[in-house]
Image 1 (tube, rainbow, N blue to C red):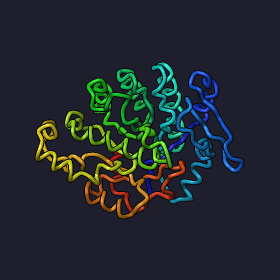
Image 2 (spheres, rainbow, N blue to C red):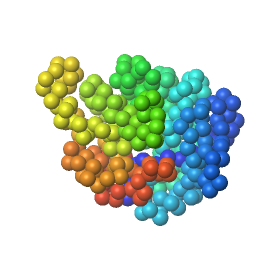
Image 3 (cartoon, one colour):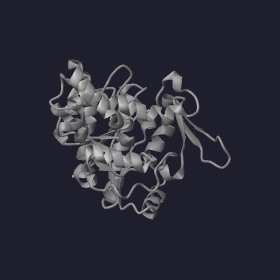
Length: 311
Protein backbone atom coordinates (compact mmCIF):
# COMPACT_ATOMS: atom_id res chain seq x y z
CA UNK A 1 0.00 0.00 0.00
CA UNK A 2 1.13 3.53 -0.80
CA UNK A 3 0.69 6.62 1.38
CA UNK A 4 0.91 9.81 -0.68
CA UNK A 5 0.27 12.33 2.08
CA UNK A 6 2.82 12.19 4.89
CA UNK A 7 5.09 14.78 6.48
CA UNK A 8 8.57 14.72 7.97
CA UNK A 9 11.24 17.14 9.24
CA UNK A 10 14.83 15.94 8.73
CA UNK A 11 17.45 16.63 11.39
CA UNK A 12 19.24 19.11 9.11
CA UNK A 13 16.06 21.18 8.95
CA UNK A 14 15.71 21.14 12.75
CA UNK A 15 19.32 22.32 12.97
CA UNK A 16 18.56 25.08 10.44
CA UNK A 17 15.60 26.23 12.55
CA UNK A 18 17.71 26.29 15.68
CA UNK A 19 20.47 28.23 13.91
CA UNK A 20 17.95 30.70 12.45
CA UNK A 21 15.40 30.81 15.25
CA UNK A 22 15.62 34.58 15.66
CA UNK A 23 15.19 35.28 11.92
CA UNK A 24 12.07 33.09 11.65
CA UNK A 25 10.86 33.54 15.24
CA UNK A 26 10.95 29.83 15.98
CA UNK A 27 9.82 28.75 19.44
CA UNK A 28 9.61 25.34 21.10
CA UNK A 29 6.96 25.45 23.85
CA UNK A 30 5.86 22.75 26.28
CA UNK A 31 2.07 23.14 26.47
CA UNK A 32 1.11 19.92 28.26
CA UNK A 33 3.02 17.52 30.44
CA UNK A 34 2.00 14.42 28.51
CA UNK A 35 2.79 15.85 25.07
CA UNK A 36 5.92 16.75 23.14
CA UNK A 37 6.93 20.36 22.64
CA UNK A 38 4.93 22.47 20.24
CA UNK A 39 6.79 24.26 17.46
CA UNK A 40 5.68 27.77 16.49
CA UNK A 41 7.05 29.75 13.55
CA UNK A 42 6.37 33.47 13.60
CA UNK A 43 3.57 32.98 16.17
CA UNK A 44 1.50 30.96 13.67
CA UNK A 45 -0.04 27.50 13.44
CA UNK A 46 1.81 25.80 16.26
CA UNK A 47 1.78 22.01 16.24
CA UNK A 48 3.01 19.21 18.46
CA UNK A 49 6.45 18.18 17.30
CA UNK A 50 5.81 14.47 17.71
CA UNK A 51 8.78 12.15 17.55
CA UNK A 52 7.41 10.66 14.31
CA UNK A 53 8.02 14.04 12.64
CA UNK A 54 11.75 13.92 13.33
CA UNK A 55 12.75 10.30 14.01
CA UNK A 56 13.23 8.52 10.69
CA UNK A 57 13.39 5.05 12.21
CA UNK A 58 10.16 5.61 14.14
CA UNK A 59 8.51 7.04 11.02
CA UNK A 60 9.41 3.95 8.95
CA UNK A 61 8.41 1.58 11.74
CA UNK A 62 5.01 3.24 12.09
CA UNK A 63 4.42 3.16 8.34
CA UNK A 64 5.34 -0.50 8.16
CA UNK A 65 3.14 -1.42 11.10
CA UNK A 66 0.20 0.28 9.34
CA UNK A 67 0.75 -1.85 6.24
CA UNK A 68 2.27 0.96 4.15
CA UNK A 69 4.92 -0.36 1.78
CA UNK A 70 5.82 2.98 0.16
CA UNK A 71 5.45 6.51 1.54
CA UNK A 72 5.63 9.83 -0.29
CA UNK A 73 7.19 12.23 2.22
CA UNK A 74 6.51 15.97 2.07
CA UNK A 75 7.78 18.99 3.98
CA UNK A 76 5.30 20.38 6.48
CA UNK A 77 3.30 23.47 5.44
CA UNK A 78 4.36 25.35 8.58
CA UNK A 79 7.86 25.43 7.08
CA UNK A 80 7.00 26.83 3.65
CA UNK A 81 8.05 30.17 5.22
CA UNK A 82 6.27 32.33 2.65
CA UNK A 83 6.11 35.14 5.26
CA UNK A 84 9.85 35.70 5.02
CA UNK A 85 12.31 37.21 2.50
CA UNK A 86 13.19 35.09 -0.52
CA UNK A 87 16.69 34.29 0.71
CA UNK A 88 15.33 32.66 3.89
CA UNK A 89 12.66 30.68 2.04
CA UNK A 90 15.21 29.60 -0.58
CA UNK A 91 17.74 28.58 2.05
CA UNK A 92 15.39 26.30 3.98
CA UNK A 93 14.09 24.87 0.68
CA UNK A 94 17.59 23.85 -0.36
CA UNK A 95 18.32 22.25 3.04
CA UNK A 96 14.95 20.49 3.16
CA UNK A 97 15.18 19.17 -0.40
CA UNK A 98 18.74 17.91 -0.03
CA UNK A 99 17.89 16.13 3.22
CA UNK A 100 14.78 14.42 1.86
CA UNK A 101 16.63 13.42 -1.30
CA UNK A 102 19.37 11.75 0.74
CA UNK A 103 16.83 9.92 2.89
CA UNK A 104 14.80 8.69 -0.08
CA UNK A 105 17.95 7.46 -1.81
CA UNK A 106 18.85 5.46 1.29
CA UNK A 107 15.53 3.59 1.18
CA UNK A 108 14.13 3.90 -2.37
CA UNK A 109 11.77 0.96 -1.99
CA UNK A 110 10.13 2.55 1.03
CA UNK A 111 10.26 6.29 0.36
CA UNK A 112 9.78 8.86 -2.34
CA UNK A 113 9.86 12.55 -1.50
CA UNK A 114 8.59 15.94 -2.59
CA UNK A 115 10.49 19.16 -2.02
CA UNK A 116 9.56 22.72 -1.16
CA UNK A 117 10.22 25.95 -3.08
CA UNK A 118 10.33 29.71 -2.44
CA UNK A 119 6.94 30.34 -4.04
CA UNK A 120 7.21 34.06 -3.27
CA UNK A 121 9.79 34.26 -6.08
CA UNK A 122 8.45 32.12 -8.96
CA UNK A 123 11.68 32.40 -10.99
CA UNK A 124 13.68 31.15 -8.02
CA UNK A 125 10.97 28.55 -7.32
CA UNK A 126 11.42 27.20 -10.85
CA UNK A 127 15.16 26.91 -10.31
CA UNK A 128 14.76 25.18 -6.94
CA UNK A 129 12.21 22.81 -8.47
CA UNK A 130 14.63 21.89 -11.25
CA UNK A 131 17.36 21.23 -8.70
CA UNK A 132 14.97 19.15 -6.59
CA UNK A 133 14.07 16.96 -9.55
CA UNK A 134 17.77 16.56 -10.38
CA UNK A 135 18.25 15.29 -6.82
CA UNK A 136 15.66 12.59 -7.46
CA UNK A 137 12.61 14.16 -5.83
CA UNK A 138 9.25 13.54 -7.53
CA UNK A 139 8.08 17.14 -7.42
CA UNK A 140 7.17 19.68 -4.76
CA UNK A 141 4.53 20.58 -2.23
CA UNK A 142 3.29 24.19 -2.29
CA UNK A 143 0.64 26.29 -0.61
CA UNK A 144 -2.59 27.40 -2.32
CA UNK A 145 -1.19 30.78 -3.33
CA UNK A 146 0.01 33.94 -1.64
CA UNK A 147 -1.83 36.89 -0.09
CA UNK A 148 -3.64 38.58 -2.97
CA UNK A 149 -2.26 36.11 -5.53
CA UNK A 150 -3.86 32.95 -6.91
CA UNK A 151 -1.78 30.18 -8.44
CA UNK A 152 -3.34 30.86 -11.84
CA UNK A 153 -1.91 34.41 -11.84
CA UNK A 154 0.66 35.11 -14.55
CA UNK A 155 3.37 35.77 -11.98
CA UNK A 156 3.56 32.01 -11.29
CA UNK A 157 4.07 31.11 -14.97
CA UNK A 158 7.85 30.46 -14.63
CA UNK A 159 7.19 27.92 -11.89
CA UNK A 160 4.47 26.07 -13.81
CA UNK A 161 6.53 26.13 -17.01
CA UNK A 162 9.33 24.32 -15.20
CA UNK A 163 6.92 21.91 -13.51
CA UNK A 164 5.47 21.14 -16.94
CA UNK A 165 8.94 20.50 -18.41
CA UNK A 166 9.80 18.22 -15.52
CA UNK A 167 6.42 16.42 -15.51
CA UNK A 168 6.54 17.08 -11.78
CA UNK A 169 4.03 16.33 -9.08
CA UNK A 170 2.76 19.59 -7.62
CA UNK A 171 1.04 18.72 -4.36
CA UNK A 172 -1.12 21.68 -3.36
CA UNK A 173 -1.55 21.71 0.40
CA UNK A 174 -3.59 24.38 2.21
CA UNK A 175 -2.30 26.68 4.88
CA UNK A 176 -4.38 27.53 7.93
CA UNK A 177 -7.28 29.80 6.99
CA UNK A 178 -7.02 33.26 8.59
CA UNK A 179 -10.63 34.35 8.00
CA UNK A 180 -11.56 36.04 11.31
CA UNK A 181 -15.07 34.56 11.15
CA UNK A 182 -13.57 31.13 11.76
CA UNK A 183 -11.46 32.08 14.75
CA UNK A 184 -13.25 29.77 17.19
CA UNK A 185 -13.89 26.09 17.92
CA UNK A 186 -10.94 24.93 15.77
CA UNK A 187 -12.78 26.06 12.62
CA UNK A 188 -9.60 27.42 10.96
CA UNK A 189 -8.51 23.79 10.76
CA UNK A 190 -11.85 21.96 10.55
CA UNK A 191 -13.34 23.90 7.63
CA UNK A 192 -10.75 26.60 6.91
CA UNK A 193 -8.11 24.17 5.66
CA UNK A 194 -10.38 22.44 3.11
CA UNK A 195 -11.85 25.82 2.20
CA UNK A 196 -8.40 27.10 1.19
CA UNK A 197 -8.01 24.06 -1.06
CA UNK A 198 -11.49 24.65 -2.51
CA UNK A 199 -10.73 28.23 -3.51
CA UNK A 200 -7.38 27.31 -5.03
CA UNK A 201 -8.64 24.22 -6.87
CA UNK A 202 -11.67 26.04 -8.28
CA UNK A 203 -9.51 28.89 -9.55
CA UNK A 204 -7.02 26.51 -11.17
CA UNK A 205 -9.82 24.54 -12.82
CA UNK A 206 -11.68 27.57 -14.18
CA UNK A 207 -8.48 29.27 -15.35
CA UNK A 208 -7.69 26.48 -17.80
CA UNK A 209 -4.19 26.28 -16.33
CA UNK A 210 -4.10 22.52 -16.88
CA UNK A 211 -4.57 23.08 -20.62
CA UNK A 212 -1.52 25.36 -20.68
CA UNK A 213 0.58 22.97 -18.60
CA UNK A 214 -0.83 19.48 -19.26
CA UNK A 215 2.22 17.61 -17.95
CA UNK A 216 1.99 19.00 -14.42
CA UNK A 217 0.60 16.37 -12.06
CA UNK A 218 -1.52 18.45 -9.70
CA UNK A 219 -2.50 16.64 -6.51
CA UNK A 220 -5.02 18.29 -4.16
CA UNK A 221 -4.92 17.53 -0.45
CA UNK A 222 -7.90 16.43 1.64
CA UNK A 223 -9.93 15.11 -1.25
CA UNK A 224 -9.94 18.44 -3.09
CA UNK A 225 -11.57 20.35 -0.28
CA UNK A 226 -15.24 20.99 -1.02
CA UNK A 227 -14.85 21.31 -4.81
CA UNK A 228 -15.80 17.78 -5.97
CA UNK A 229 -19.00 17.92 -3.95
CA UNK A 230 -20.15 21.21 -5.56
CA UNK A 231 -19.07 20.42 -9.11
CA UNK A 232 -22.68 20.46 -10.28
CA UNK A 233 -22.88 24.14 -9.39
CA UNK A 234 -19.78 24.84 -11.50
CA UNK A 235 -21.25 22.90 -14.42
CA UNK A 236 -24.42 24.96 -14.19
CA UNK A 237 -22.36 28.15 -14.12
CA UNK A 238 -20.48 26.91 -17.17
CA UNK A 239 -23.81 26.69 -19.02
CA UNK A 240 -25.00 30.09 -17.84
CA UNK A 241 -22.05 32.45 -17.76
CA UNK A 242 -19.26 33.25 -20.22
CA UNK A 243 -17.04 34.28 -17.30
CA UNK A 244 -17.07 30.65 -16.20
CA UNK A 245 -16.71 28.95 -19.59
CA UNK A 246 -14.37 31.32 -21.44
CA UNK A 247 -11.13 29.53 -20.47
CA UNK A 248 -12.48 25.99 -20.76
CA UNK A 249 -13.01 23.52 -23.60
CA UNK A 250 -15.30 21.20 -21.59
CA UNK A 251 -17.55 21.37 -18.53
CA UNK A 252 -15.81 21.68 -15.13
CA UNK A 253 -16.81 18.11 -14.25
CA UNK A 254 -14.56 16.90 -17.07
CA UNK A 255 -11.62 19.00 -15.85
CA UNK A 256 -12.14 17.56 -12.39
CA UNK A 257 -10.91 14.23 -13.77
CA UNK A 258 -7.54 15.69 -14.82
CA UNK A 259 -6.24 16.26 -11.30
CA UNK A 260 -5.35 13.84 -8.48
CA UNK A 261 -6.86 13.72 -4.99
CA UNK A 262 -5.85 12.06 -1.75
CA UNK A 263 -8.19 10.13 0.57
CA UNK A 264 -7.77 12.28 3.68
CA UNK A 265 -11.52 12.56 4.18
CA UNK A 266 -12.28 10.34 7.23
CA UNK A 267 -15.55 9.21 5.67
CA UNK A 268 -16.19 6.24 3.38
CA UNK A 269 -19.21 7.80 1.68
CA UNK A 270 -17.22 10.92 0.83
CA UNK A 271 -14.42 8.82 -0.63
CA UNK A 272 -16.86 6.74 -2.65
CA UNK A 273 -18.40 9.90 -4.07
CA UNK A 274 -14.98 11.29 -4.96
CA UNK A 275 -14.02 8.08 -6.79
CA UNK A 276 -17.31 8.16 -8.70
CA UNK A 277 -16.78 11.82 -9.66
CA UNK A 278 -13.15 11.65 -10.83
CA UNK A 279 -12.38 7.97 -11.44
CA UNK A 280 -10.40 5.41 -9.45
CA UNK A 281 -7.19 6.29 -11.32
CA UNK A 282 -7.28 9.85 -9.94
CA UNK A 283 -7.59 9.02 -6.24
CA UNK A 284 -4.52 8.06 -4.22
CA UNK A 285 -4.33 6.88 -0.62
CA UNK A 286 -3.10 9.41 1.91
CA UNK A 287 -3.00 9.77 5.67
CA UNK A 288 -1.61 13.23 6.63
CA UNK A 289 0.59 11.30 9.09
CA UNK A 290 1.69 12.21 11.73
CA UNK A 291 -0.56 15.28 12.25
CA UNK A 292 -3.40 15.03 14.78
CA UNK A 293 -6.12 14.70 12.14
CA UNK A 294 -4.37 11.97 10.17
CA UNK A 295 -6.35 9.10 8.69
CA UNK A 296 -4.41 6.24 10.20
CA UNK A 297 -3.90 3.82 8.67
CA UNK A 298 -4.64 5.22 5.19
CA UNK A 299 -7.48 3.78 3.15
CA UNK A 300 -6.07 0.61 1.60
CA UNK A 301 -8.87 0.33 -0.95
CA UNK A 302 -7.82 3.26 -3.13
CA UNK A 303 -4.58 2.19 -4.79
CA UNK A 304 -5.27 2.46 -8.51
CA UNK A 305 -4.07 6.03 -8.99
CA UNK A 306 -0.77 5.47 -7.19
CA UNK A 307 1.22 4.22 -10.15
CA UNK A 308 -0.04 6.80 -12.65
CA UNK A 309 0.97 9.62 -10.32
CA UNK A 310 4.45 8.33 -9.46
CA UNK A 311 5.36 7.21 -13.02
